Length: 384
Image 1 (cartoon, one colour):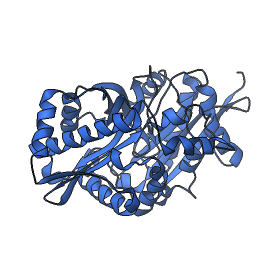
Image 2 (cartoon, one colour; image 1 turned 60 degrees about the vertical axis):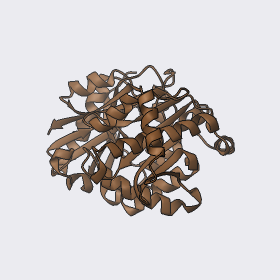
Image 3 (cartoon, rainbow, N blue to C red; image 1 turned 180 degrees about the horizontal axis):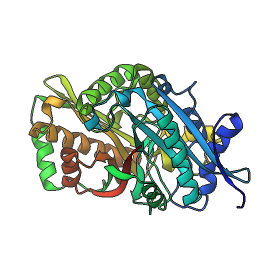
């Protein structure tokens, strides 16, 4: 396409539509890209709908040639990120960018430059990305594992993006891994012995969540999560409004037997959340729920049959971390959910993650159940 390249902020409903729709054109011939639900993406970038904007500000940019959208990017400053300890990936002066899509290297360079200029104008001295748009959404750039589709809530990117980002002066700061495993077969004998030992321990109880008490159960799980993850790199606590927002989105894909809570002497100390891979159920919907796809998806969610289950969240309270009991609870929850996934949903594959590259405890658990890294997402940084 000929014509000068321009980059400008998103301002109108037409601009927002172009911002969301661009990925559908760029990935139209990529068999491993899964069309997101457009309503979800519009909701993500809408300050009137997404409570993340209650503690953050963002600018969204479109790159155009000849009046046609050829790229997009977000730039954001999150007050909760600024308040983080620097060793956890944030701190004063830390701005972020994300949601990058670009037709070529020239477009990518111009977009990153625009995002950096916006961050500088707000006093930022360090640029971190891609974070699209929160650590709880789609963090990191896919740098390994482009040969198969992502699972629900994970991103997919053109392999060329890595060189384009690095050409802009960025260096990797953190890798996030997902692990692939065959759940149709039993885990290794060592894991089976650990699970059996836990089942003989009267102090331990592994229970399903009760969806009829959704708000109460969600508060319990998030309480464990905030305690378990508070020292993790990149951790930003969810606000009350964000918890309500996330709950509304997750409730239709939450199933009692796929989320477990571990109790020790009656005290909840760990949890594991597993979701059917929604991407398998929406891949043929073209990103749109209306007019009839909404009914189709609701029907599929009544009794979902999927190949893959994803474990997006798992946590053990801090006082038990790095103990044998923590590992035992983790293996018990994993095994119980594995059984339910195969028997009740027809699943044969699991994906765990993302897991931070320095989270040796979780990486060890993943490796002990014979899972292997199948995707790597990289977060970059640059001094402004």
